[in-house]
Picture 1 (spheres, rainbow, N blue to C red):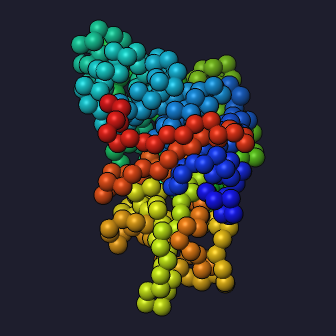
Picture 2 (picture 1 turned 120 degrees about the horizontal axis):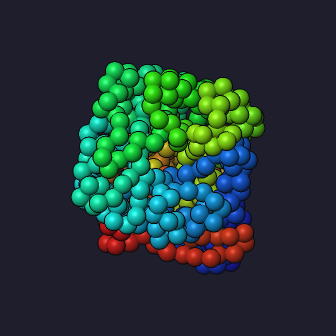
Picture 3 (picture 1 turned 180 degrees about the vertical axis):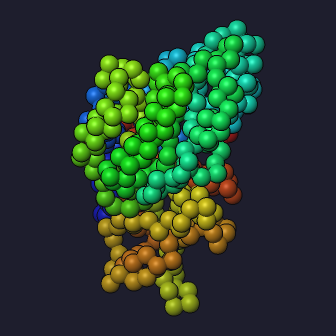
Length: 414
């Protein structure tokens, strides 16, 4: 960065660029990670546990900050298992999740010391039992439940619809014997996760109320509920300005719901746990990228960036989710803001972030930043497509750059 080049974004971005971090770069702010963890912990019942979902962002320094802050780890792949262990979580504290697991991956997890799993079907129970028998170990599991219907207001529905996640509650009640213990597997509780990225406390409480009522129904039918995993859904902006969802009133509302549906929870029976990825790290990351080219095409400005759907929003780029259309924070440009096509460098017309971003006239070399992409940013994108290099990942703590690295696709953990 030249001395006279304007710096977009926040203090963490400014710190990384001041220290010479090249673009494109994801900048992660550990102080924001810690603040988010403290905010979420204060909004949840005091005696509850909290898992961090590694799929949101498995960067080692992010994981270390969350582990040091007291979060547990939830993993759903061999690579995430390796990342959690490398970050210092003991294997027997992990929750291994996911709707489908290979025998070899289960066996390796057991050999490494994992002892708690979430399962979605009778077959998954039988599979885990067979692998545990072969490894001569006993394991615990949570039975994941697919509720009868979704709650409104979910950013991405997980259950209450035809889904790979969980066993339909009607099925479980109709054939309870198929969902019980096995010789090497003890079913110790329930896992209910209705949806993600909920917009506010009212939506969260409605989701948790339904999950708790379903859990109480299953307990009344004789199902063991020593552990009650209520999932999460705590919202945060993605690629837009703003802060994470205000959680004021959530703790009090959860206390009332738990007192009604799980009256022993204050004494630890059941143990209540939650999960979060997006809320904890979403607002802690920005993507900084430079303008490569600017031109006029069919009456509209076109800006081509270093980064496209390979670095941010791969799922949006494939139209699996709505188009990204991120906020673009800039400190350069001349003239009034005009509708602008913002594209990446990939050789495909799908590589478009926005077809109408309002931007001043930018020049090659100008920098822009996309805020709030610490969750589902780099690690949910098309990093292998067309062989473009991955962006730098820079970790900042306060006003200090503590680490830089670049994801090497030839050395992904196995």
